[in-house]
Amino acid sequence: VPYKLPTLPIECFAKSPLLRQHELLIVGEGPERAAMQQRIDAAGLGDTVKMLGWKKQAEVGALMRESDVFVFPSIRELGAGVIAEAMASGLCSVAVDYGGPGDLLADGRGIKVPLGTREELVARFTTALEGVATDPARARNIGRIAREFALRELTWDSKARRTVEIYRWVLGERPDRPHDWHGETTRPTTPPLAA
Image 1 (cartoon, one colour):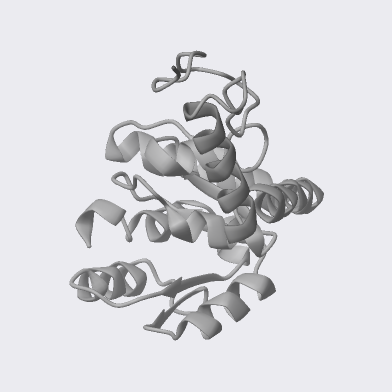
Image 2 (cartoon, one colour; image 1 turned 30 degrees about the vertical axis):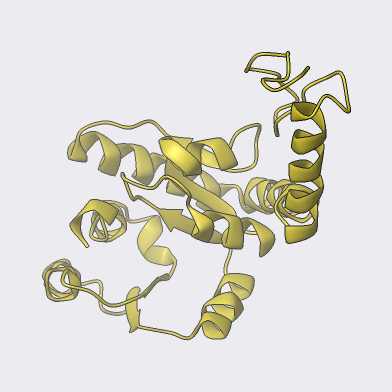
């Protein structure tokens, strides 16, 4: 769909001889598919950019585990579960620094591209992608950091433990507010329901 900016990575590959030496796999279906295929054809990227269409979740997971970088240019994502999946797969994610993606990719867990105009986003994503293309060790390191974080903080077990600790704090069973992912306490430190 348009707000996910699915043609943006295609434009990055069209602009960059370096990126055209790599392969871009696009997974999914939607109303933008025809426009995307037109851009691929117009830029002569048929050998580099592959539109794979809809895939089952297991197939998407396998593709993630076989890839090096996850590109997510969407500008309206609050939760960004797909970023968490990419992180758990050990991918270096490149995403717009907005909402959920920006929070998940903080502290070196990914590459955050500042929000801007479409032209600015194309330029910034191109630069970011060229950076990881020329430094694959950096991409692997970011992917390792992201995976460690995902396995430590984003599993159902870890979320359940954090939720229990929040309830304990709210009920006054612990004096301090549980820290967020960054180790920060950004909300009131007094439990709202403490007696």
